[in-house]
Image (cartoon, rainbow, N blue to C red; front, side, top):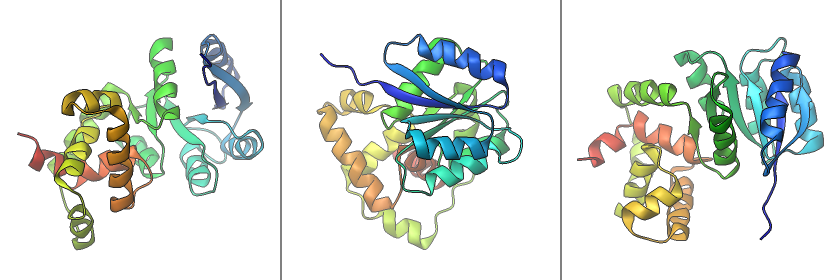
Length: 223
């Protein structure tokens, strides 16, 4: 059976950090580090040239920082996914990174196993958030739900099953976990997620989770 290799570009202004990440990820049989960048500008340029599956991007870098670089990458035509990397889990960075379109946020203190799992999750279209980040992020969003008339109209496009799937996505479940919860095939879940994204006019499941929590959908649907 052929295993698809995940091509990763590392972007961090500290050489030692990049070298350490390259060793950790390079030891994984399904991950290949295809390039390294020392700042955001270099990351954008190398992404255009190398077309990696995932860019592991430090938040704080000189010149063009990681969030600004992620915003450039994710507003272009490239299918690259961005996983933010930092020593900080402060709310301002979390929100800015996710709103820029990042698929996840992992701390530099994460274990090699957790880091590799985050890369795999993001490459597979899932969201990846450090547990400490997720708890505060969701608590903040659920404490201040506000839905515009346009958002309400989009939500009303969802079927009951699609709304249920969105709720489970917002709880951080993977497609496999949702399939087990609803007792359906994983491909069926993928179809529902695709329809949810299309109807809500969102790019990926990370934005879908943020949308659900920001507008109180998960709280209304959960018992």
